[in-house]
Image 1 (cartoon, one colour):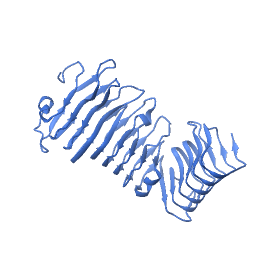
Image 2: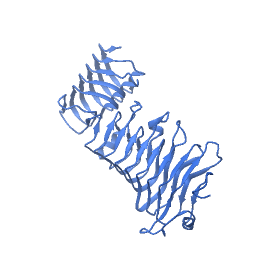
Image 3: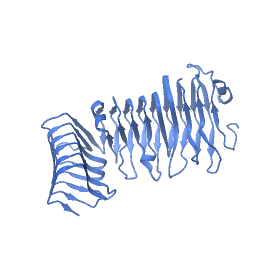
Image 4: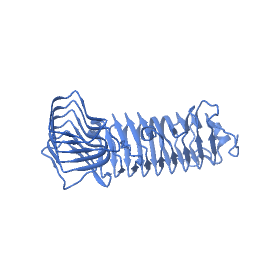
Length: 376
């Protein structure tokens, strides 16, 4: 099939000579890469196919560009629109429109596996509709100036961009609407100057990292969402200049006798390995986890208001935490007012709780005292 065909077709490049079939220009050198462009491919719902990608490139050494294509798929038997496997040469994927297969569960638009790129892989100026990125064991990728949009039934998590066991990845200048970045076992990740906007009021975290080291989160904007990281991830992360719902994201690590009052309002607060802290007068709304207390000693949370969240206050592996005279209201998504695990000495007094799926979710907590709380 050719790019002028109305029938579905697939572009399979398994060796360097296959570029001669599909490339419109180029010789495959770094200065003159092969160019694959101008294809409009739609794979319908009932089309029989079991294949890794509509454009599939594997085991090649030539450099290439994939640009100006429109690809959509409505079946579940294709792993990705663009599937790149065991490629170490530099490539660029730009100016493509990639659409997912349904409003229920989006596709992987670009799936990279075992790509230890010697130069740089660039993914830029693409539009992703109900679709995402998926990286596994990938190095040296820049993702910039793309638009990721999803309105699927399970939107944020199912429309997320995943990176596993990868390193030296940069997300910059992208616009994420109802989508997220999830990382695990990733090192040297930079997420900078992106906009994360959740319009479905699910209040998931837009960035969620686990077992990831040497990460940078700088100058990002979060709207109706927030940041979530594994406890140890914070220790090697550089977090600066991020905004949540028009307010700064507050991250406080290894501080003593800290006071956070109403003189500075935060959009989301993370407190890690601090002792003798007072947090008061905060009004935090429309985010995933409003306030997180992790590995802390003697923390007081007083006279704060938390509304519209997945979790109002999370307390993890902390001792002597007082939560007094706060208000927890979340009429849009009713999840947990307070989520605590491995907390010793948890004192809850004169708080006001709205209606939640689970008001208090306590795991392996000891010496929990409740006094004069109001449950609406």
